[in-house]
Image (tube, rainbow, N blue to C red; front, top):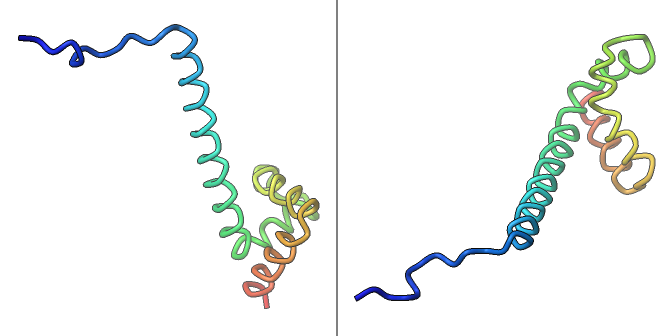
Length: 92
């Protein structure tokens, strides 16, 4: 006796595409949050390295890594205040 509910249901092509797109968006959001958290946490101890990269012809990779954080701080005042306080805690 086989139960008809035990067979896996076949999904349509569009359902699979939609599910994979949603999974991609979920993962993208998680990766962006991880990047944002990592850049905020690391900017404190790395401030002088970042400063050198931006203003004294230092590493281009460091400047590019923190460029999205700089953009966010330019557009979100409360985030800018939070990041500045965190940086001041490290450099003072």
